[in-house]
Length: 472
Image (cartoon, rainbow, N blue to C red; front, side, top):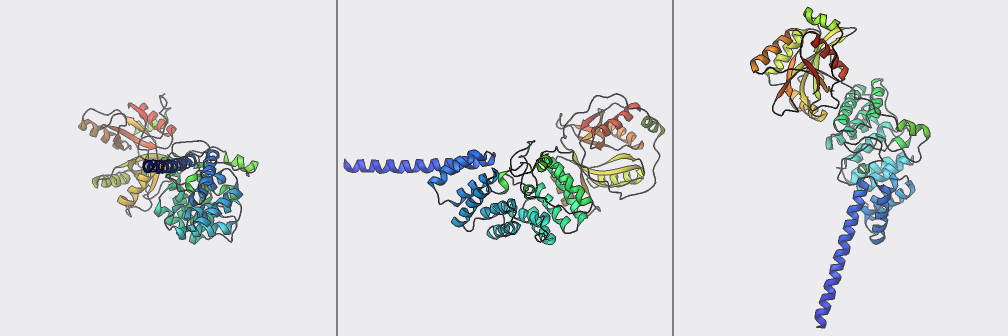
């Protein structure tokens, strides 16, 4: 009987031990969740309790240090990162996070040392490559900057994770290395990827950097507060705290250290004002004047319509469309030449279309585009895999608006309408109707702004066409 009682007590103790371990695991999961949703004060309560019970866990100290960092308690964060590294000298995340902390404190040399150590401990830690490339590109201390090394590191980050924030860092590295043409090209790519990922808060900063590179000026962070902050998670807008994922091992996309959003406690009034400004609209890619020649004449009926006031139309829809991205491969002032190029592309299985635009200085241009894509990344993949070196400098453009024609009931009538519009200088192309899966719409043009599409629709209405502005 005594033996049975002893076994029962032992089993109960094992059960209690298992329950305690399970409870601790649940607490750890809760702590990670609170970091993920940026509830740092609540996370501190959880990690204080966990560390009181399991004080030898390196990752617990690291995660609490991250919570301290995001609440502006830099000295406490630094102490926790130090303890995390003491408990586990190969904890790459802890070195990376301590590097961030050093930058906030203005010790750039120690930040570089810690980022470098993080990479040595974990050669696949993407955010460490990104952090080190960024500080070597934009650090206010010229002794720290190293453009060629920054390009090498940023390329590695992009290779490991081709995201907008890593492309943004690569652009800064190119600019520091004096390769401004590459910096401009990559920064435009980052802008478009930000848009397609649903991140709008960083667009203004990305645009400001683009303007700097276009002026052949490298980017400089003016203070530590601008170095490591981040924007909301995909699909959200507005201000938010620094995201944890650029430093901690949490299963979320990492963020760019160059994208400020939370105003740190030590920021000045001027910095707070600069960080709280609204984001602008995305930039379109510049047209490539690849095919040049003289202007063709347009039928007089269309010319007369263009000179008249557009007819009243209902307001176009709002949003970004289903497939708003396309690739521009060139432009020509010869309509026949542009059509010839587009027809050749169509015969090879591509999906070209032409948009006719008028420049007040140089006259009419026929811009040649390929494809309709749901994201900028999808369009860049198309360039990298299908176009390769077929064109000089293809670029992704964001063109959410188009003009839709009433689709004829038969394929023959559809082809006839297409031929009529082509004879008048307008390329008609088909795209899937998002409201009617399996059915296509006949579209003319593709534009960044609704007013551009409204102008074309008005001209076509004056010429007797039944049209409306739609999202692509």
